[in-house]
Length: 228
Image 1 (cartoon, rainbow, N blue to C red):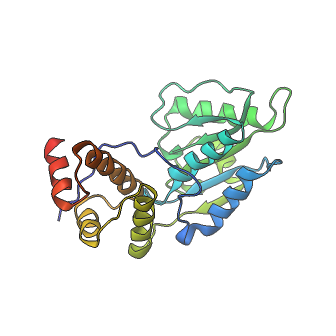
Image 2 (tube, rainbow, N blue to C red):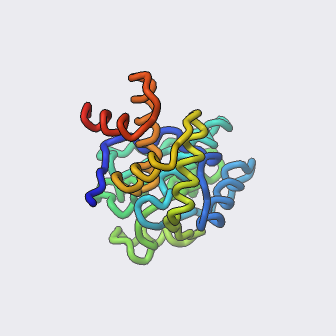
């Protein structure tokens, strides 16, 4: 059966509180302690794993946690064609989808790394990066690749079926939605099983249900697809 991938925003609502660690508990707890500390280690952190394993969620969740503490961060992913220059006010730089960086983005990321180590008039800036391959396998310029791999490296794994269902149910309950088993089965069988996509789909379905004043059912999902 063909699964449907919708064009939806995957960045909404990513927090450390709504991340289910599953097999990725070691990386999750390391990031939670790191983000919550007043004195953070300057040793870089690199997360790698397949799409849907939670890399972007964790980076955005750390950004949110730092913002709540009043810290400013620099963000670079493969969609930003013209990266900003390093800002000495940044306390952390976050690099997502590094395996897809262009030559321009690789140069910017390298410059950020250099400036993060010796910022003008401040403490070293933390670095957290993420990609789909381990550092040794990244097809990037050598000086950037080695910097990505010299610190803490964590491999992230996909959640299994039961864990994926638990995340969806937790996310639904957080929005005040009771997700029936038949609706859960329909979603998992008909849409991409990438966890970020599933959670964003649930947000979109909730918005459509509120807009149409209808409960979240299989007919509602079909109606939303027809209106898309």
